[in-house]
Amino acid sequence: MLGQLRLLRAVVLAPYQQVRACKVVLIPREAPWKRATTGYAPSAVQCPPVLPTIRAGTTLSVNETSWLKARRLKTVWALRDFLSRANITGLDTNAYIGDGTDATTLPNIGIAISGGGYRAMMNGAGAIAAFDNRTTNSTGRGQLGGLLQASTYISGLSGGSWLVGSLYAQNFPSVQEVMAGASNDLGTLWQFSNSILKGPAELSVTQYYNNIFDDVNGKVAAGFNTTITDYWGRGLSYQFINASDGGKTLSSIANDTGFLAADSPMPIIIADERAPGQLMIPSNATIFEFNPWELGSYDPTTRAFAPLEFIGSNFSGGTLFDHETCISGFDNIGFVIGTSSSLFNTFYLQINNTDAPQRIKDSISHILLQIGQENNDISDWPNPFYGFHNETNINAASKTLSLVDGGEDLQNIPFHPLIQPLRDVDVIFAVDGSADTPAPGANWPNGTAVVATYRRSLFDSSDIGFPSVPDQNTFVNLGLNARPTFFGCNASNLTGPSPLIVYLPNVPYSYNSNVSTFDLSYNDSERNSIIQNGYNVATMGNSTFDFQWPTCVGCAILLRSFNRSRTAIPGVCTQCFNRYCWNGTANSTAPVPYQPTNLIKSNGSASLLNPISFTIAMVLGAWLILFM
Ligand SMILES: *[C@@H]1O[C@H](CO)[C@@H](O)[C@H](O)[C@H]1NC(C)=O
Ligand SMILES: *[C@@H]1O[C@H](CO)[C@@H](O)[C@H](O)[C@H]1NC(C)=O
Ligand SMILES: *[C@@H]1O[C@H](CO)[C@@H](O)[C@H](O)[C@H]1NC(C)=O
Ligand SMILES: *[C@@H]1O[C@H](CO)[C@@H](O)[C@H](O)[C@H]1NC(C)=O
Ligand SMILES: *[C@@H]1O[C@H](CO)[C@@H](O)[C@H](O)[C@H]1NC(C)=O
Ligand SMILES: *[C@@H]1O[C@H](CO)[C@@H](O)[C@H](O)[C@H]1NC(C)=O
Ligand SMILES: *[C@@H]1O[C@H](CO)[C@@H](O)[C@H](O)[C@H]1NC(C)=O
Ligand SMILES: *[C@@H]1O[C@H](CO)[C@@H](O)[C@H](O)[C@H]1NC(C)=O
Ligand SMILES: *[C@@H]1O[C@H](CO)[C@@H](O)[C@H](O)[C@H]1NC(C)=O
Ligand SMILES: *[C@@H]1O[C@H](CO)[C@@H](O)[C@H](O)[C@H]1NC(C)=O
Ligand SMILES: *[C@@H]1O[C@H](CO)[C@@H](O)[C@H](O)[C@H]1NC(C)=O
Ligand SMILES: *[C@@H]1O[C@H](CO)[C@@H](O)[C@H](O)[C@H]1NC(C)=O
Image (cartoon, rainbow, N blue to C red):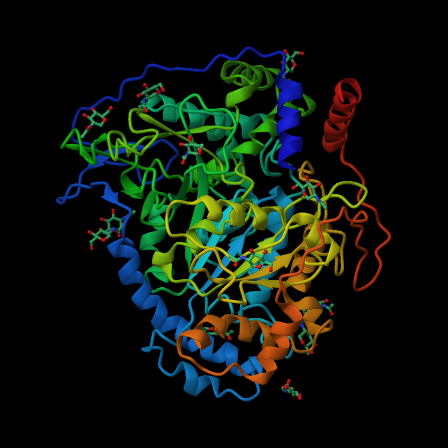
């Protein structure tokens, strides 16, 4: 998918010159300032009495640490509930977990939702619905409801960040509630039949683009640099955030009642850093995370965090240069998820194929022309790490921090924040909706994202570990991408301390959910089918393919805890590990093409290319014929 998008970029933008927009703007600095309550443009606010500063990323933030205490008091009961339903014969799970005060036994669960556009977003939504005890019937036999309530972290990247951002922007409703939107005030979310290039049904295309341009112009007028990602993020907001007024900031989540009460996992969204002048994102790129309190990185390069609420303030060498003015409102959720998915800006190349007014087509084309093909995936943030950690921070001398799509380093599953040793995660449920496999069975995952994180862990100079995993050919040959697979069962086969990985690749249970990354619109029935398929992936078809699947999930959650507390592994768990753990064998020969068919019932309806993807396919096809 990534390769295809890159190709597309190269093909369509080839005629454009490489001119980097460089606006010279001044931030007006008269006091007193009050931040407008909503709206897209950041604004100046009075600084808090204790001035915001940049901290070194050598510990978790005090905010996360204190929030985790509150979260543990919640997860312990959810976990006891979940494990009591998991039917782990031979283990009294209530007695084992106790009241949760014993950190040796209480497991710490993370969920990671991959990138891959709408496909990954919807597939991820199905998994979240399966894990959510609020979903109807999700706590019945063969189900996994309650896992979400028992989790500490949920990370999202690119398409996965759309899901995470969308749910947290609404105070964490269940996926089922969002899908039933018409009957509640979530009505206008996830209306994917209205392509992001056309906007919501309530607005004409002209009104839609006028609103987007007004918002972005407002940010410019307030003195900030903008990039194509600002337009993209505004578009995403209409689909995922429901915020025609600009929408809320990610830092405002920290004040949401549900989140303050630690009723939901902690959301983390990631993006990759791009060095000044760099074009391709290397596999060792610095990975930044956005969480409700901070933007920053634990990587040894930048290894620093900034208070998210005050991004845009004039930080220099870790402190505020201007001691009076703080900027707030830069971390608009639409802009954050736009940053994490910045590669998809490329969709605007199709602007001429929409019925947007000519003026808009001209403006967008002009923006694309200005930035040039090599830069159209970037999103510019004011650099809070200017002059901080000069020796290792590659952007230390730049006032701008360029962040790009979190999947550009091929690590398309956001493992990174969850494998930080500081976070002590025991198990990661890795929901993979990547498009890796080639035609004729295209757009299924083949382990590429897992392999990328494993390879990086081999060279990482910090203490990050990851389980050994085999190459993609082995994934396909052994069917490790065709059913859930556990990596890291054998604690001696890790590149360093690492959680157990429960890999949940997208597989067709009830629907061919391998829709193209280029499909930008889905009617409600397609949307629901893909989400339902994701539900079936997570539950193995309500455990019809293994009646012990919930037991095995419970065993996976407890494996690291068993090791820590030196508890004998229950027999039923040993059976599970024999079935689901990768046993270390490899078969790297070229596999026969992967062409899975529906596991539950065959579904004859082939997904037809929509006009936009058809255009892209034609362009790509022509390019391949001409140049390969
Ligand atoms: C984080 O914690 C610090 C110290 O308790 C506090 O001053 C600050 O307001 C918190 N930040 C947020 C965004 O809640
Ligand atoms: C879901 O789990 C939470 C946390 O354990 C619990 O408080 C709540 O009652 C459960 N809800 C349902 C519908 O089971
Ligand atoms: C629990 O698992 C055992 C096998 O270990 C099985 O015989 C029993 O039927 C299961 N009980 C339920 C309620 O699923
Ligand atoms: C929930 O389970 C009941 C009893 O099996 C069934 O009648 C009902 O249709 C199910 N509801 C959903 C939404 O699947
Ligand atoms: C805007 O971008 C230019 C060039 O990258 C930079 O010098 C300037 O500091 C930026 N301004 C703001 C407000 O971020
Ligand atoms: C959270 O609430 C506090 C107290 O009302 C306020 O000072 C702070 O700015 C809020 N934080 C965010 C990120 O909105
Ligand atoms: C990535 O690796 C290259 C080559 O080893 C090195 O020059 C570069 O500094 C590394 N970048 C980061 C961000 O670690
Ligand atoms: C849209 O069409 C105009 C006129 O044909 C052209 O100049 C422009 O480059 C096109 N825009 C894009 C994004 O392809
Ligand atoms: C770090 O870099 C900044 C920007 O280049 C510079 O102004 C500052 O003096 C440097 N600080 C140190 C401690 O070297
Ligand atoms: C796996 O996916 C990558 C792209 O992510 C692709 O280049 C490779 O050919 C695929 N291999 C197999 C065996 O599917
Ligand atoms: C893990 O096992 C595989 C297969 O046996 C082996 O190739 C790999 O080197 C081992 N890795 C570690 C870190 O022990
Ligand atoms: C699993 O249960 C859900 C909800 O009850 C249902 O919609 C779905 O069709 C079931 N899947 C299978 C494979 O039976």
